[in-house]
Image 1 (spheres, one colour):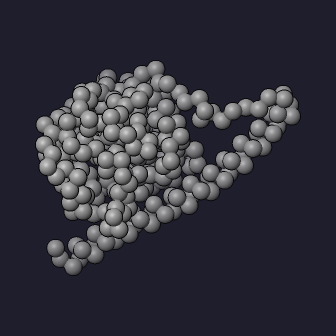
Image 2 (image 1 turned 90 degrees about the vertical axis):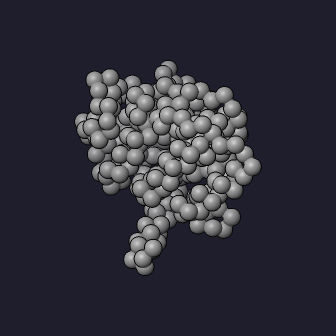
Image 3 (image 1 turned 135 degrees about the vertical axis):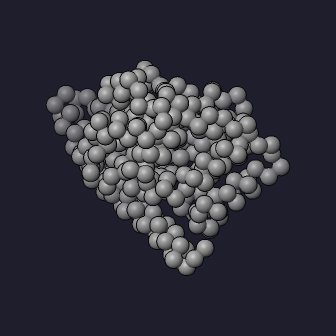
Length: 287
């Protein structure tokens, strides 16, 4: 690799780490503001009615509909790859998250190769918290569109298209459903009347809310959060910085002595029958 290419890779990772740090700082600020607002609201409600209102997160929503092939408790996880692969890669992402965009643009080819080789079963948690702090609906609409693509069997390809075309965090382009449908034209066979109706009708809005509530209850507070068999590997693992080469190395080490999985479909996997899914391999926030 040339010095120029190496410098480009370093720069991309530095941007990714900087975006992660900025997002964590924003999240801490948002949390303080939210806590302050909740305290004032509870006090006002108690004075007016004598009743203390519980945090909505204590009553997690059960979605009335989930995309085809979703797995885990309440079917909140979208899987990609073969469910009998020996390792589980868990990814928590928001469609508007700039650090997620940097991560995906650098790592999606490697993740796809590992899936296709039967080495990992990727479990996606599509969250949507950025809409709370930045005006717009792009996180929620983008998450719903991804669920619609899962229904059509094109989640992986559409997921990659969204992150390749991700706008700036403050630009709510994904809040325009026509934009989400137009991007589907880049995935062969996805732009159908059924997909358009699913996007325009926000078919999976309840599911999107439930996924976010599950994330709220977890110990994970920023995106991307990336786990390998339940262990955090982003931005570092065992004091090594995550890179595509290191990700392959870590997966191979975790799979040593184990049989590889049978590569499955890329966007719509059947319900898991082995121990490879999060539901049978508990992590701090197993779906």
